[in-house]
Length: 225
Image (tube, rainbow, N blue to C red; front, side, top):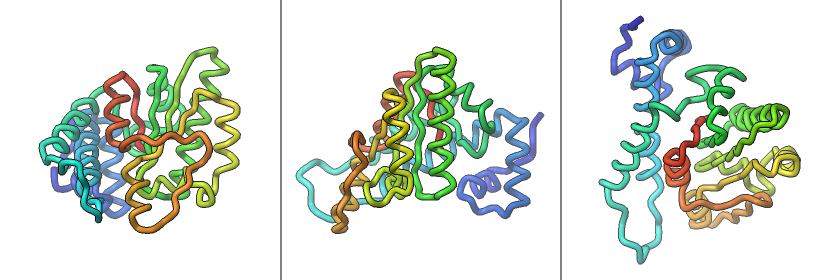
């Protein structure tokens, strides 16, 4: 069934500019219209990658060659294409254990936290723990990565994260649970004079974008929390 959701309305939805009534109307339409959900996924993904590529320029000169606009666009388009089989917004399509069970079928799930929000941080950890425990109880192998960038990096910062103890427990119980910090975000914070210390065992990727692109090209399922 098709729903009359205009491009303008869909853009406003992706940019969180709709009021609660209109947002719920779009969510209901997406729940029964796969094509509409796909349009929203692709649009949100491309916007996120373009913002990621251009929003945080380095304040200091670099010896490296400047990033090419075509490279950022190519990555955005690559992710948009991968969205058909592997991308999902946690709060838009599917809910709870049913959605996560579908994503876990690949045996590899990457959770992405791109902004600090206490509720979303808890959801990310709940999702990770649910996936890991369910797979272990079923005797099925699974790898789960939690990738954080921008404000979401606070979840992985020593002395900043309110969930450090829970994360330490999850890592002790599940060696197949990995924490990945965005190197670009770490560098940006340090350029601002902030000390950045990451939770034990956290790995640093060159960027969240490249980590996600790599994993999706390897067949991982992507869940943006």
